[in-house]
Length: 440
Ligand code: ASP
Ligand code: MG
Image (cartoon, rainbow, N blue to C red; front, top):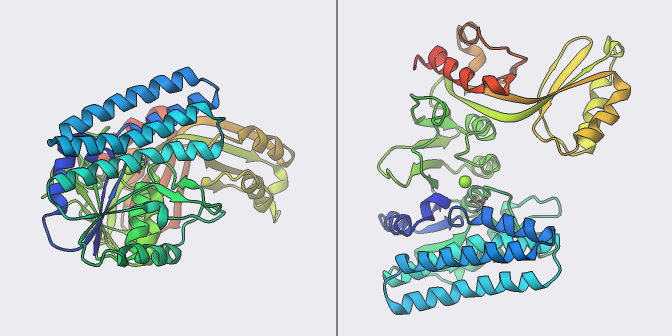
């Protein structure tokens, strides 16, 4: 059994869906096909929720109507027979009726999750009608029957496995299953989701649950690249990465794979392959336990970073100081990304400003606190980096014109992170592409 996950752009146009149908019928291995919502839909559903939360029903109604119209056009291009079109319109109408009902009742957080789930529910239904029209035997599996999270929003592979096996056992003769990414049920049994971009996570959890031969993540780029192709001219796809390297890259802005999707595959030893729907023959990137080769593999950046620096002479020779500081961040559930210390100061970075004011208030008693927003972390990721000769001299030689504010080296064998002003991000990525990969 293998898993094939297709993202929003891979199903966002009827002709892309035609291609997905082709890709899932190229071999006879049984498979679970995990789909995102059509591109743009989840953002639109978010804006409906936002409008309703502000009591702006008129705006919400207009957005819903526009989305409905988009789906009508999509159906006409996707399907050819009258029967299939009528069936699809009926299925989609149920979802828009639901959205219309929501306009009339009072809005709350649980409802917003219901709204967000509509995208994947609709994309999988449309794809299923299309497969049916093409005579491709398959079964639509309801993710809400097997994908779940606990009271801390954590999924458990073994729970998912039990319920997914029950669902699969109902259709012993089927070889192709289609299901929704992203959506799940929470501990209260309500409709919930695995957070934005969570369809990759669904795919990886499903792959772990069925012990899949491979978890294929199909997007619109041919694998993970050595640098950000939107910023740097010459980049190339990386053939093989270890899970540890991929985890670093996924977190640091390499949008191609949701960071949470690494652990289920790694823990259950499922190879992950990143592939390109537009170029299905391209090798893409294989993610497995072994790194494949030593040295630098890739550079990635993360924007919107805030640096917090706490200076205190009380830190000199003191113990327990860092614990007290970390506790403040823990209290406000704000993850710390980078940290560097000197004998009298500690600098750390966070990527969420949500609770910054409260955090700063509580840090004040520890010393002088300085905050600088708008920074970027540049992560240099590879295998056994600390064993790679010259790496630091090459790194710093390339960075001469850049103001480097923090450096983190040795935290893991796979990562060197530097903090630079956000305005220097592009220049830094370009300089490193030249200095570390020899590419202009
Ligand atoms: N549709 C969801 C989103 O846009 C999940 C996903 O596509 O991965 O965030
Ligand atoms: Mg995605």
